[in-house]
Length: 232
Image 1 (tube, rainbow, N blue to C red):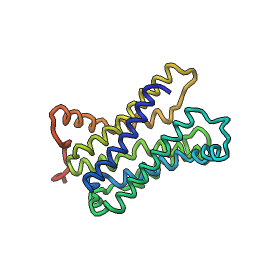
Image 2 (image 1 turned 90 degrees about the vertical axis):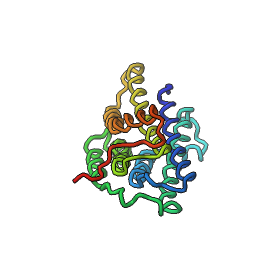
Image 3 (image 1 turned 30 degrees about the vertical axis):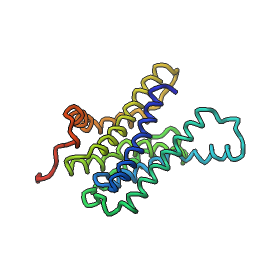
Image 4 (image 1 turned 90 degrees about the horizontal axis):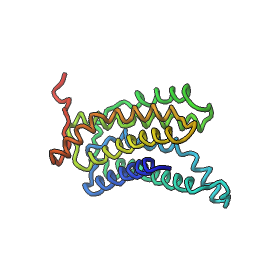
């Protein structure tokens, strides 16, 4: 591992803590897209099915193939899964009355269907686990779209929500740097599916990054975007 990978993982983990803290502190999930959070939960569920294999080795005390990197990855995967499911749980139980369902209108099948088709066609190996992993890569690239559409619809995001989104976009941007570093330092390293999806995901955050830094420089409490209100 390198510093870019570790920094990306920590920023990703921070994004979960920021969002959970925001929802618990304000007792509200207003401005947060449930559909985006639901898709992130699906992303991690499909991607981390190998956890059963690793945990099985641990339960049976088969540590021959378990390295420090394996333990690190397993720990982070469990945290990501637990946090994503907890967020969905909060948004559909104690905070449901504060959700923005009326404006969170993005049609999920417009994302899910193309990602599923792409995973069936473009994958490294035609096995169930590999197809599900590839599906999760494609889906994560565009899972933020309902959140971005909700942000455009409302025209602004509070400080914690904007920090959360910056952490999500920033983690993937750091992964791009990590891939460049690995390509330059590791012979035969290649992962074009993740590269393309990661570039798309980072590009989707382009406008948000601009307005986020404008907010930081101006010292505004809320991030403001051009709104679609009033358009025909």
